[in-house]
Image (cartoon, rainbow, N blue to C red; front, side, top):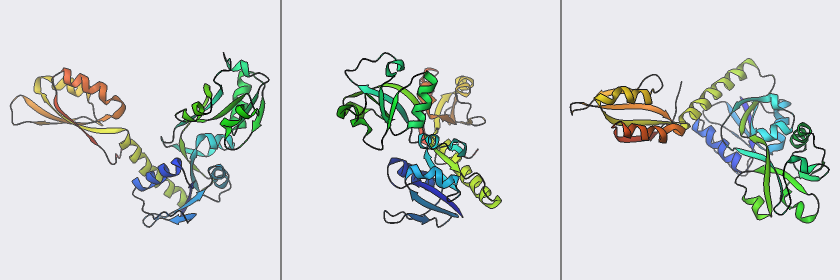
Amino acid sequence: MLRLAIQKSGRLSDDSLQLIRECGISFVSSSYKLKVEASNFPLEILYLRDDDIPGYVQDGVADLGIVGQNVLVEAGCAALEVEALGFSKCRLSLAVPRGAEYNSVADLQGKSIATSYPKLLGDYLAGEGVQANLHTISGSVEIAPSIGLAEAICDIVSSGSTLLGNGLREVETIFRSEAVLIAAPTLSPDKQELLDQLRFRMQAVRRAQRSKYIVLNAPTSALAAVKALLPGIKSPTVTPLAEEGWVSVQSVVEEDKFWHIAGELQAIGAEGILVLPIEKRVG
């Protein structure tokens, strides 16, 4: 049985559990239990503090983990990463009080900076040739400038609303992060096979999330142009309509390209464009 460690609460936890369920793995989660066993896949889920997950996986206490890259790199365990998962994206940024003068990172030379990520920040400043005094604190980093603890902060940013609410402005992004799947350095052959099965399912779910199924009607005279816009996985499905001179075209399109393609399809005469979600996409 694989033991998978995830964050015990928060957005990363919710997204991780949703991914596992979308992989067809059933379990009953509870706020009172710190571990739960799946009913239809040899998987046990452990609920841990996110900062503890890299160490548990590094030591082999857990076989796998889902954790933010920022936490993984800060813990010095970047080599454990096996799969980027595409959710819980955020950035680690420097911020200063709104009224403070700031032209470049060189302005932080000799200043005090509060952060929960001293390794990531230290590596970034060293690369920029800047020496600063780092105050390592956990939680409520944004308050540090207003109480005189530091002249700048370095913390995780999603929307930036917390910075604004505390009189700060973001000035540099030093690291971009997303959720990743990590694995212990040595897994038995049986567990490696289970990991491969789990990754296969995760990849199918992620491909589906990035893709849409598109159905449209087009004049036969425009079919070559439609095919050029919608190559599909191998090629689009084309079916003649009852009305002579028209065909129905079915294909798969990457979601981030859809709106651009939709405009071009309309311009060449396509009609009745339908866009449908894909639950799973294998291969």
